[in-house]
Length: 196
Image (cartoon, rainbow, N blue to C red; front, side):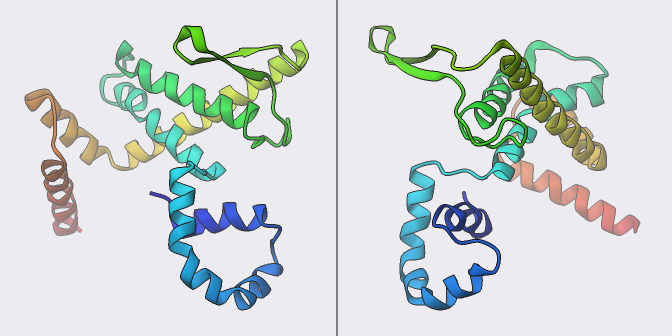
């Protein structure tokens, strides 16, 4: 779900408003905003408009499994491979497709082409950048992933009691449903409040 701040952070710069223009935008288009915001939010959700911070959050969540393995077992397994693949794809797209990297700037690197005979699979062809730029793309992609992995470890370490409880529950039951997960988190929060 996209939040209002993320939406405004994406929509207003796209519409040509920034900084000091925000007040004039809201005062000039108040009625438009009040009546159109639900439709604009639906548009943003349907078309998958994401802010840079939202993508970083998604990458951080994807790296949570690997971070949890390392924290709990001091070992890494193949269990997080799909999440790592998704995180890598998001980070690379942020760098090469969305122009969200300060070093590489707002430019698309590589051309995407649909291969209908491969089941409409998308592939990259015709690199429009040098080997030096390719190395920088790899470096910046890795930098984003490492940063998000570090953030995931930090969050999990700060919530270690919750992580241990979830790990114990998963070892016993293999899956945790939403309501059961909430009960576990509430249990830890109550215990923490009682100890404070």
